[in-house]
Length: 253
Ligand code: BV8
Image 1 (cartoon, rainbow, N blue to C red):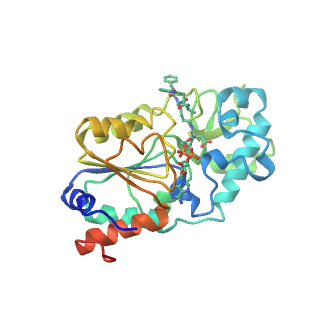
Image 2 (spheres, helix red, strand yellow):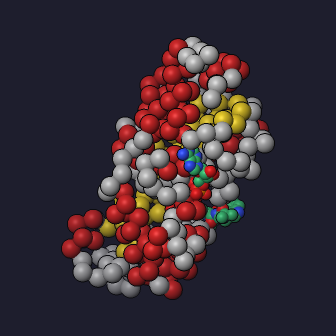
């Protein structure tokens, strides 16, 4: 893939880039994308139907076990070249803001600092009644599935993620929206651009005059609206982009 010169100019010239990632950037680490997260033993469920408070209320054990399965997958994976390229990009662009919809913590594991997690974190646990954090040692030593919450007599433990129909953490969302409105380049990586309000951030950036770039092997609702759409996997496109930035042009030209 050749990186177009106008894109390179925009990347070189930007000072306040925002990068927003979705499940696609973790695909090359071996984590099924969100919409494929109903694979294997979970194939008979739609992730969107499990990632809701209603599903948890209806069958706490089923939803808890789905997240435990996804957590266990995480123990066997590590960040990939796409995550590492974003760490490198942050070294070249110190005012870069990294926003993720992912709950897997792989950006932090790769070395990215100040990651804005719009949809929470699968490796943390909260009380379903109060939202208060629950220590992982408490979760591990409980023999119940899901563990009863230490914060509320009728509460259960649940993953610290944002479910469909739940509000995003106000601080994270406001930070992401501010960054999107102020940025001069918005890079959307590995997201199907359908989940709101995250999907609107790219449009917000474009409306504020930023150059919008999409990296995704497939078409999404953003593809036609973006200034540049690079069709390819994040694990190879992002390193190419950073290499071209460092060399001032695409080394493969
Ligand atoms: C809310 C955590 C309001 C859980 C997730 C308009 C405005 C506001 C809300 C809505 C609205 N319209 C609809 C809604 C409701 C809903 C929504 O958006 N529904 C969708 C399905 C239409 N939104 C909500 O409910 C949100 N809440 O708005 O609340 C409110 C306000 C006040 C008070 C009360 C309520 C909450 C949404 C958050 C849901 N939680 N995750 C968990 O993970 O289990 S969302 C979930 O989807 C994941 O976080 C995931 O990251 C996210 C988005 O999916 P993607 O990341 O894009 O993943 P996907 O699999 O879809 O796509 C992967 C892409 O990667 C593909 O395009 C593929 O081509 C690409 N790819 C594959 N391989 C690669 C690759 N790309 C690059 N490289 C590769 N190698």
